[in-house]
Length: 291
Ligand code: G1P
Image 1 (tube, rainbow, N blue to C red):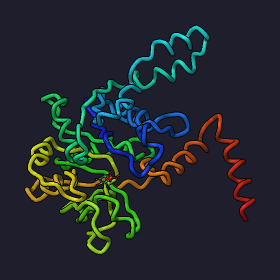
Image 2 (image 1 turned 30 degrees about the horizontal axis):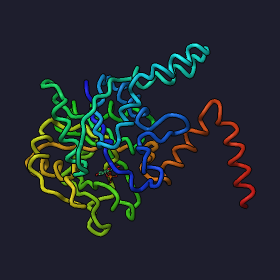
Image 3 (image 1 turned 60 degrees about the horizontal axis):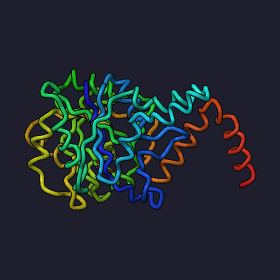
Image 4 (image 1 turned 180 degrees about the vertical axis):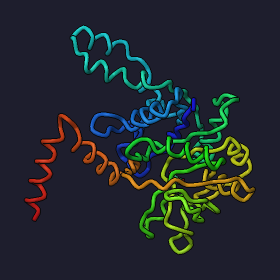
């Protein structure tokens, strides 16, 4: 896999006012922006290129992958090697390629724009949503194995409580007798709880057959008046294209809203070699005070 597509053009409305001027993909989990964590996951997968879909006012996301000669020189002169490595890390992980989405027309529209940067021999469109941290890293490798076995497209799914399905793309599924893999017979974007076909939902990791680009050109605006990736996947299913989910049973954080973001910071903070111990102590104290 050469290219991973990262839609990062969203307005971050759930995270205002922080996202008025700072793209949500640059908010740090401890000290590392979400977009760099995605770059790390993509690089681990063997990808060499990150096609970052950005909005005109979100150029900072791409700038995070640029060299910063003045800062690098200063750090070098002062012998601050550790900090220098941190500044250079993103660019060393992967080559970020910008794809501009001029108007917020939806996730489906954003993914469709990536067609222009994929090479002709790339038969799979790997999409990672930077809002979703799927842990431990490596879900895409497992999904690639499922694709090698069943063909078609493979998505990552998690099971959520019934009353939360309205926030996600929801799968209609059929068991195929394989633990953690299910056949998808339909998909619907953010349905009402009563209409949801299951409580298995899409969680930001997609390995899509290149046919998705054709489907994306044929869908009409859906939920929220936006072109939905979910609707293009549903169209492929209707046309007989095989789609499966890999059910992820590990941890997952939604960095796109403060509640999920705080959890991610606590999770990574507790594991951090410098801050972990102190944070654990502080949280324990704080909770004891509350009781
Ligand atoms: C998007 C997708 C949705 C998916 C979700 C996962 O929604 O449209 O199908 O379940 O990401 O995070 P968003 O969260 O961008 O509204």
